[in-house]
Length: 220
Image (cartoon, rainbow, N blue to C red):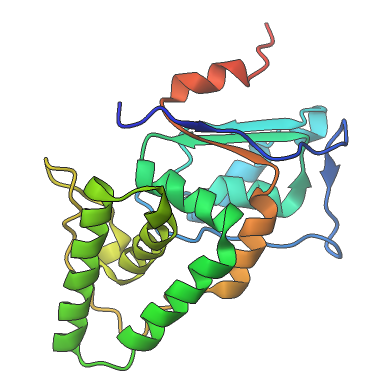
């Protein structure tokens, strides 16, 4: 298991039941990363199985990944409690930084975007490899104070690497080459701020899926 740390939610919602947003008051949010196995293209089918019209007011996603279903639910429902987890430490760190420190994250991403977009392909490759090396150094040697930079690098690499893949070698080092994107959107500040707002009452856990058992209400 890569990590077992748990970060509890901030203040819980005071409501005892869920509220479905109307088209007038909902804030649409979308995944901030590409992710292998993402379900964005399947949401129309998946929505048919949402249980929230049956009095269910809690939601748990123990393999959150890019969060396509999570963000669809957050865009359409105001639930009593939401729990997400994953064993990928860098992924969960990015969720936490977006929730807790979005403005500093956006500032870093805007810097990367302004530096990366204008340069030619050869210099882009050199820039990308430097950022990848820095990310890997923080993965292995970084401390808590580096978490915002690490999250910014995670997003930058995801937006500029080949096919948005997240792949590591046996040493846990990210090793995906640069992609061939002409004008990648590295910083979507509007969506990041909206995601931050939606995550404020979400319990975010870095750990094994079995940790979600304490959150889930089993019904026989």
